[in-house]
Image (cartoon, rainbow, N blue to C red; front, side, top):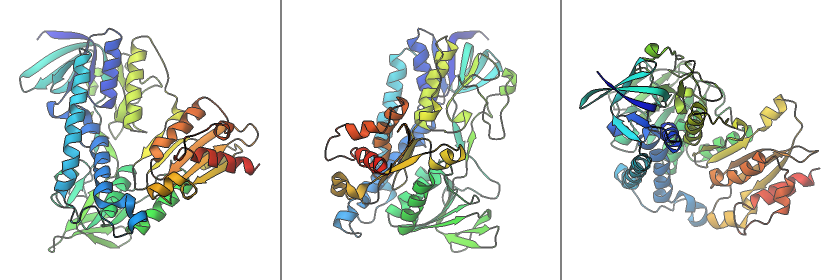
Amino acid sequence: MSADSYDLVVIGSGPAGQKGAICAAKLGKRVAVVDRPDRVGGVSLHTGTIPSKTLREAVLYLSGFRQRTLYGKDYRLKDNIGIGDLEKRVRPVLAHELEVVRAQLARNRIDTIPGIARFVDSHTLECTGKDGVRRLHAEHVLIACGTRPAQHPDIPLDGKKVFDSDQISKVEAIPRHLIVVGAGVIGLEYASMLTALGGEVTVIDQRPRMLDFIDTELVDALAYHMRRHGVTFRLAEKVTSVIVDAREKVVATLESGKTVSADALLYAVGRQANTDTLNLESAGLTTDARGRISVSEYFQSAVPHIYAAGDVVGFPSLASTSMEQGRLASCHMFGEPSKLETGHLPYGIYTIPEISTVGKNEQELTAAKIPYEVGLARYEELAKAQMMGDHIGLLKLLFDPKSLKLLGVHAIGESAAEIIHIGQAVLSLGASIEYFRDTVFNYPTLAEAYTVAALDGLNKL
């Protein structure tokens, strides 16, 4: 079988694969992207970032959650919100984003090959699609095949009563009471959405603390507000079995002997990389137990011409960082190396309220024995927040008390993931918090929280 030759073959068309392919094409390389025809855009577009964040916006809008501080806790834009109401918002967004991805690949003259890829050897791939098998020769390969929800033999997923995050779109009705197994980002995001709709949620996790990479003060604030809206946390607890009883209730038994009953259960404990079908052994590669590929700071694998980027290389597994990883992988493989500044990566967690953070947190600075001071701005001090009805938000600046250099920014509340980028820019430039004191921000805005927080911090010195 003859093989079509490419400078780069990308396996996967999600954020990492798409941006890696486009970067190589702009460098004048011949590029092909292999993915299943129903998965163009990857997990991010079909079951991850885009649908979940669109669903969140639909929930906040239809439930009237954002306006309840202004109009009362019983305020709702629509009563009896169903799955169909949410889908009306999600479907057109997904369709538009799919068009955008396809147009960008086509505009950059990238061959999109429908099918499933597997290695024959380190430079040869077979792509199996509905039209048969096609062989590709690649000078370089970028593996960006993404992940899927991890499964557990003691959690029998049926896609109806017991489901994972990929199966949520197929659930027939919104449960009034949901068990969420896993207090990670995905589990907490969906838990907070259901409570915004008026449901009850029990979150179970075997770890004693959730979101241990996020500033403790923000996590405590999130837990407080989620509890106020109907979430029960059972941390340091392990689920040993799950059944659906005669009443059509899902019953989870815990290692401690407790049982928890609900209408449905979401299993959201970790992700498994989609590398098991790639025949990586033929390319000379291995993975860890979760199917993840080990890479260098330039996203280069143990086989020099094979790179990997996105969720398949592990933490932080964010669409935003995956895009940059894919781009930087292409830059390095074609002689324009650049490293990812991991210390300045922003994290956005779209719970209700949302959390965003960049730079060091208090726990990291304390462990590293780095002196710091704290400046706080509470949303209740901001006119814009009063207009929006957000009285719970908080912006937190960490800085060096001698040089005043900014060390970290942490935010919880409305638009936290938006305003974090102001702090990210100042942090990346190595500037001090005096910038926030001396800069005029539009008024009224949430951005002026930076001035309030900087003045608070400076007043402590």
